[in-house]
Length: 216
Image (cartoon, rainbow, N blue to C red; front, side, top):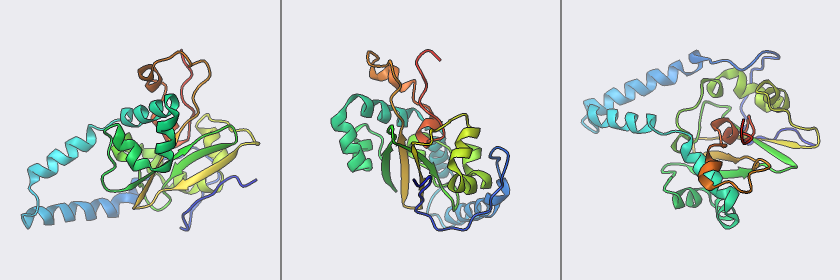
């Protein structure tokens, strides 16, 4: 059984031990490039500094609650889940969570398959649904090691996946973002959709964790 599948073909540098760590230097070039581009657009009058500030504030205000809303609806509405899996953008738009610039692909965890998201090239991430990515997601260690040995990396996050379960690693791109629909915890049959949302964590929608168990 294949432990990991990835759509990326990038080279990797692997560290064999230790938890994923941030690596700000990896992104320094792109940060400088982004600042230079922003200053050029303002200088040319294409956008104003105030428009840039407002966009940053709107982006910073997004939290994983948007994604949790989508997952909880998928847990409680089979028809919605089917539509979401068939067309992620249309499904997200139904709940007023539009993916404006990229294609959203929803992937569902099952007793036989566990999905985890990475961006091996940089840090592409469904920010419209989850907000800003955590530092470990952007780290070189996570981006390289989760492709090579996802089971070990998940264990470092406290998530142990049985050997009978296939681990599928999805490599985000400039055009595609992924959202994991974690398995619904047992004993939640009587919970409302709003209560279920509280069980859906950011990490469970990335795939490095399971959804929370009620009462924990």
